[in-house]
Length: 465
Image (cartoon, rainbow, N blue to C red; front, side, top):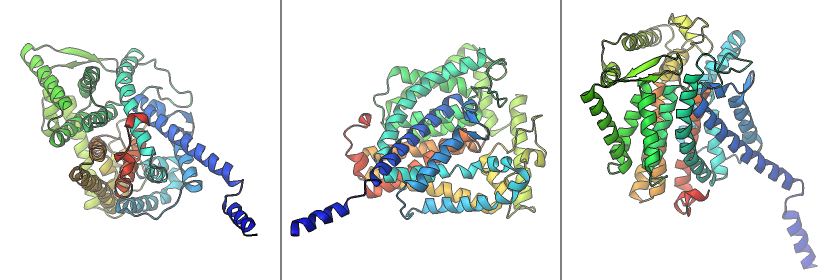
């Protein structure tokens, strides 16, 4: 009798048969979503805006990935109370953004939702945060996939750049949009070069062999000749890595290659032409041109196009400061929906495709007012401080893998923030989805290091995942 009672109790404690297929289905859905997210990120990094238009209007690849992620979050996530201050601050930012978006949806429709992407894509941070907490081994999977991404990216970008030059004016376009299927921006590429640099310096892919050094240096030199903002981001990330890892051989070799190249150009006076993938015209690369690019960041130059674009930005940014800090939009901003370029008088495209200033931080100010900018700054600083504290603790505890991870994420975040200060970057899916995914991984990593440090500390080899 006692044995029968025990058997009945044991059977009743097991999940019903229906629950097992449901759990299996959710597990497969979770794995499929992670694969889709990684594929989406790879496409954005290599093909740029062209990949963003993969899909059927108004649901493109980014929106599909977001919807499936939200579906998993609602049906399959193991909800736990939020115990990180940055996540609460992020929710506050999203709430304020929603308040400044909803009143304009009826008037501007899909444009309001597109403008809201700068805070709306933060849903990716929440999804990946809960995803990693539900299955901590995902962190190892992502690190290993990023290792493969570095090789794919460094190999593909020269080919993509050449293809855009060869097919300039005749590049195939999506039938539902006048957008070429390959349209990667120089600034975006340089941000990912920053991430790859930090990944290698952190020690996740040692030893760094000569082919990778050549590819990294070549991409930085060629792409950097087109984009000052991305070049500033790359230089800043290099200095951070040099400060934290002063003896790393990769930094010394890249520095030697850069100095040798500049000296060669200065002494020889040689200049060479690099084709522009956008116009088909060649851009001259010489010591004088590179020096003018650098000087134009901090002062005026004799190069008209460099000074004109800088002056255009400064004038627009000053107007935004005037009507927010000193004007009628102090508390509310102009909202998400109005075309700021048209409304502020700085439109440069006949199709009115420019909608926001070339500064993501000032986009928040112009659209969400001073409260929105304050929340934005607090959200970013809280994230950076969390990574810095975790990095210092891991260094003191000699957790080399954790300290390497926090260094990598911190430098990557810095690159995104720097490029966003000079370009329309995180306002779109190519930069926004990448940025908020890194943000979510960072918060999840800080949480894991506090509660389950063995996930990364005791892993036999990252290459096994």
